[in-house]
Image (cartoon, rainbow, N blue to C red; front, side, top):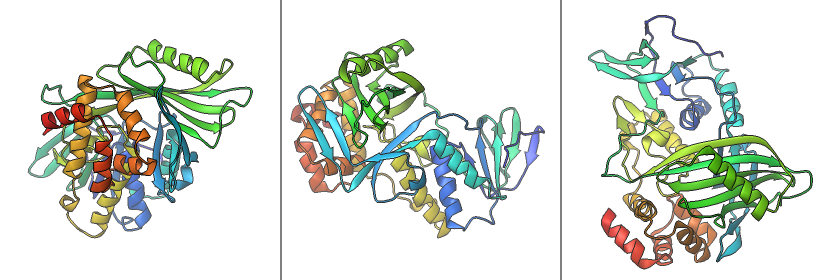
Length: 390
């Protein structure tokens, strides 16, 4: 099903649902709607600025059993290395598996399925906002107007809010190289979750390594800082890590990827400006870690369950306040550099069982787990940060 461009200045069309953004959140929601078989009689519009033709990102997450997108999991591991100067271990995370989905395979899979459904229209254009009036809402796409009637709108397009001293605004930014070697250089059945042996001069920094085979791996350099680096700085750190820590001298870079994930203590509303906010736009990025993929999947399923049951979307529960509090406390420490992030994550994995840590990072831990994890972290920095966030 090819996408179309708006051909007139104003276009009227009755839709039941409109999804703004064909990224992870928009496509995950639409795919779950399709799989129910309950929306074939509904007119659905999917809007994005341009076709998805490149492998622009890689999503990594952990889960038990087979997930919704199991067919396109590119690689998965049950053993993960955690490395730092003072503690290193191979973590057995069973019954979890750490899974990797490549962006281009995700897009191709979703759009192939979407193309089978004539009730779904794909429209390309730059979303410029919404104008509200008594008849409903007008969408601005490029310099054109689209009047969709009384459609339920889901927006996954994240627009950074204005900078405010009231909030912590930290960035998780990364650059990755897919490297290939002539001789075996990786253990294919084990990935590196975090390697903190890299310099911490810019802020909290680590590398993760995802082997696809004995001679091919994605090596990604990641930072939690207020500001981005120059491109040559990312390249320098990647080169240094590969050659000095992995001890690989001869390799080729076959692919590159980079990205920026917001980490903030802002509270994102679920419904705003005439649309339900999903994905990063709706606060589904975990503030303290940047993990997003699985939170998007949980939210998408909750939305679809409500739509199928004809229940109000307002009945979907918000993230429990205690998890936001934990995230904001850690953000406060990282943002103000009150204690080294490297030391915090080292203590977290050194003093707790891997499965407990993963449940905690998924917002699925018990109070007992949380008390144990909190007690394993440095008391005074966390207590002071907790008081400030409270």
